[in-house]
Length: 542
Image 1 (cartoon, helix red, strand yellow):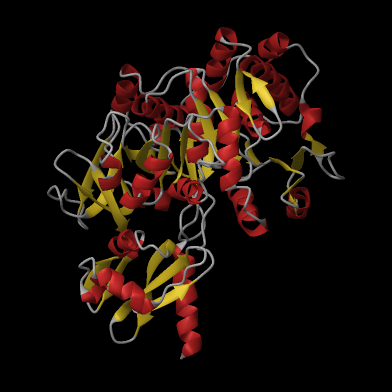
Image 2 (image 1 turned 45 degrees about the vertical axis):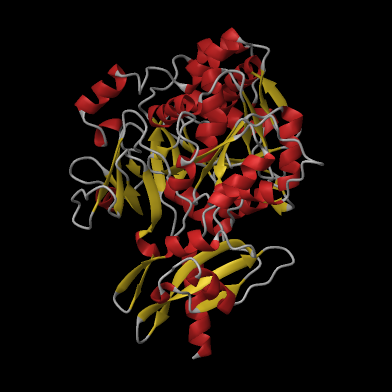
């Protein structure tokens, strides 16, 4: 297993500790501190359960003893595939206490993805739901032949172990003494698999310090306090949810409400019921909430902050959100599994920045825009967004070639995302390198087209991809999800875009109207699925 010295120089490590970006504290230390300071404060709630800081701390110690009795040791990898339930946080903290490495898996993943991740990670155990949304997780894992299958919120069918049975009947103080010191914050802590927008997901190995640093920096950017209650519909089996719905509130003694199954109307009710004040999600979550939000029926007025990531925030959408939630700041954020947050807007920024940019680099981090040769480009020029800082992963698990290809000689990582930086250092993500359509030798950024169509009154969601063409190499294909009760044609799309001064060469030449776009669990559009779809349709048409 890789170490912190494989990614960071001795000077970088010294600097990050000296500036407080990294600290000699673990997840267990944070939990112990909060349990001592505010033992009876409710920290976690989900649809049915709740835990105070003290209850969580005590249960984690008992669970760690139980896991150790099942043979789990420091360095072992344990898959955890659960919805946003409090048991997921218990498992994460208990594994960390042992020095074991959690491998979180999205609840939507099935046998193909799960089998790949479990094998790639070398997992010794899986902790999963018995069933969720009528899917038999326990049966899936039994068919994969994993060494140990632990089921949550179920009786434990044959060949599995009930999660509840792992909590040792022991005094928490005695358990803490028996377990001894917690793992080092620079040891591998979690392996988060990228959401697979292009191919097989890659395992991003993070330490507790690389993850916790991201939470600390975001807390300052968001003006976070112990009075906040985080709203967590984003899967905490991925970096967004784990960093912002668990670590961020834990560090500040705040609360966190976890929502297991996202549904916009229910989301508004959960916000009201639990008094949620802040959220960090993919942009689609907020868009769906606003599309179904009726002030006469819903009350999400407790929200002071919603941070949207993964897709641009259309200006008209922000205006509508501000009308419906006048006390809620809408901020934009750009990040990825490899380094968590690359740029973000903050509560101190001009509100217009969230419409015109995806924010700036956080303190202690550096972002630059480079050309295809790696040379930094002038401000205002599009190029690859490169990052360097204390939240970098150690590397891709078992994939030294991909890891080496990701990093530059000066320690930056290549994102594969295109962007432009203005004179003040604010970055606007303009697309993916693979989102460039090369039509007759002309490079066309699909992000520009998507941004314009996001304001079309009949368009609920849009994705633009290149489709193969014998003469021009590629032409532009537009996938659209219409708003309820609306329809849209290719001619209407073209007329709308021409009315916004888009060049004729950039107009879509095919329209595919669909009920929904293929998404990853973190709300990113899977454009490789759309490219394959249109290529197959063109092949059939021929």
